[in-house]
Length: 134
Figure 1: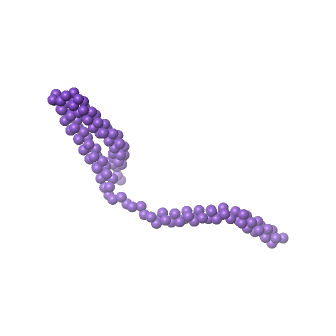
Figure 2: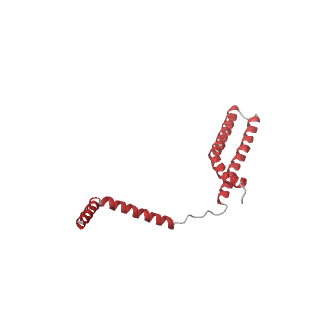
Figure 3: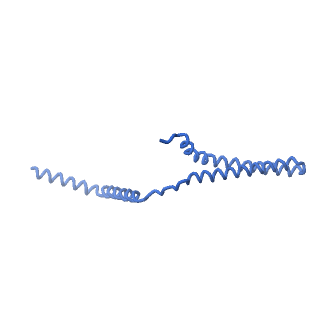
């Protein structure tokens, strides 16, 4: 009797496998692809960042911003002096004022775009300066 019940159980088991063979094949395929991906990722090495890489980027962004600010202030002083010299007609003064507003707008747009980058890059340096090292 035990042999017959074991035979019936094995027949039912193999029948279930036969009925769900595509699902089982799909699951085995997904598992094998996942294991291949895991093996491939473990072979890849994350490149190390050279020392001073982020500091150099911060310095470049700060220099860009400083140069733009200095350029803007120089242009602003020159244009104000031109406007106050009273050598120009009102149309030329209006043109100079428009150029001044455009340069100010470009400066502010650049600052709005660069501010999160500069502040975000300086944050780790601030934290490393405030935390005492053991």
